[in-house]
Length: 243
Image 1 (cartoon, rainbow, N blue to C red):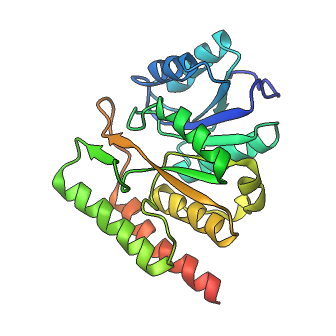
Image 2: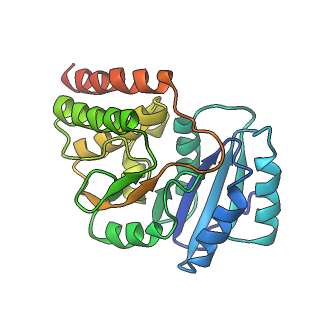
């Protein structure tokens, strides 16, 4: 296990959950560090059987900006982010980003997120605003995603075009205000819940356009369970507010 370095080298942190991302993790770390904009990385690995955790330790040993959190089993993306956010809040990070490890999010866009969050509290890399888009998705998945986001907007009233977006940057004040121990959602539902809670607390949310590219290496983590959870999570959030 890589040692916990226990301090923040920079003000900016990117939290990256991993499970079987051996084909991507070294390239991702190299790309993020090449931005040379004062960015640290926290890789949260769920005991990947393909060796992603060991590779992450190797990368951390050679780069002080890279940190690794090892979890004992596949415990879910939502909890990975929550654990990563808590780790960030225990240190001096001012801006905490999240992104996938599979290059569906362009690391270059981290610079635009970090710039955008200076004028708001939560900056979302959106697939569904002007000049944004999705590459290499089949028509059915594009329709499913767009329909899901319309559903989220109608039911919650939340003025966010991409409520299921997983590429974003928070000011630490947002994460400090959310009861992270009470966030139980996974997958798309986790993203919806975090956006909703930030919005209900009055934080300023901004969306910037990104081009989302379907992963080229490894396997997608999407499942029917994740889709159904998101469908019902929206009602849970609204009814909890009303109850």
